[in-house]
Image 1 (cartoon, rainbow, N blue to C red):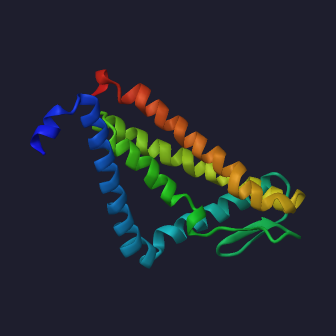
Image 2 (cartoon, helix red, strand yellow; image 1 turned 45 degrees about the vertical axis):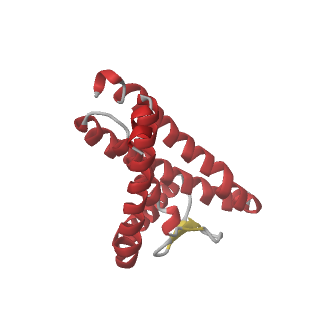
Length: 176
């Protein structure tokens, strides 16, 4: 086994280490979320409450009469959008932050970039849900497609772009 490790190129070692760190971080997140955050529920409830209030605020700014419940918001006369734990963005925050944590870069850059990235993801998620509320109002038959594909692609594309920015601006050899 030791001979095998010595034969690895620096690039192979980097990729292997990256994958091992990624798997380890995923398992840590899974245990943390399933055994503490999910059971307690306060983080999910906080995010959902903030999303409901933010979406309502934006829809009202756009001139709509809005209804709100604990985990739902929409334009009066529609069924609105229900925001569950999978849609509150928490797993996207963890995915984004995990990638930044395991990728090389200076700690001070990570401490700056991770919160900014999470904030961007949260704002994008707010506008995604506003968009879905508008879809329910004007084209309800396309809600499932837009929820599953259109907005998912947009959100993941933005996260991917932020990762590319991290790799190109902060994780270069000059910044390690």
